[in-house]
Image 1 (spheres, each protein chain N blue to C red):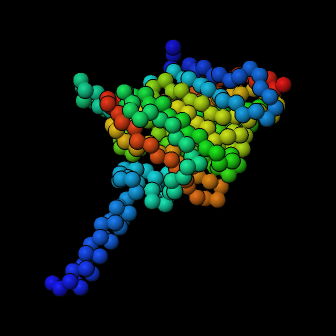
Image 2: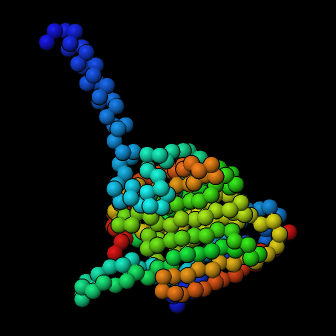
Image 3: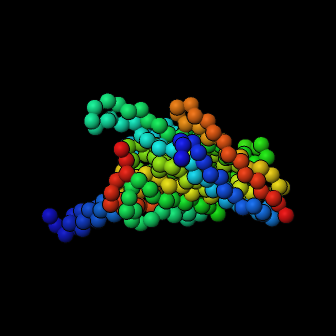
Length: 108
Length: 148
């Protein structure tokens, strides 16, 4: 998968006021800055830096991260749903890449 | 030395032994961690209280340091919590991630997978609305490091 590709998973249905888990997996190397053992040159880091979680366009959480997160980051965050809506994650890396994913929750 | 001075001296010695461990930095923090805490939170580790309401789930022994699953949960109501941090004491960069929380989260819950260079303490720190910090600490033994 290409860098930045992501899977966002939420329950399809939830009860009003229920706290659900928003789970995501993003394809990304998350490499720290280091020296290339062959050439001795500095290799700059390549990591995700920020991820924002929105629900119906309202900002729920902001995650800041660095190279301490494993490659192909998995994350799960709680979200309380009061009405049906769209979950959106928007994330970016230190090389200017920007992506987003959406998923829907139906509140019954 | 008569008996009186001997007793007085041994009392002092015993007191010194019992008090000495409390004078050391809490849970063997590292200079790198202290620096990072000062930079990001503006507090020292000794000012952060370890409480049972913060729950940090992590393996006791991780086979690979490249992929250590951790989960931070708390019973503290979400509207009293502002921010969450994850630190690993002995990593080259102790700061792993931080999460800004809002009441819309409904619950303090954050789960991810982290890298660990060597056996170290993992810390989950919460900042509460009243400005205080609370945390949970767990030691994870790493058999193969996952940094660099």
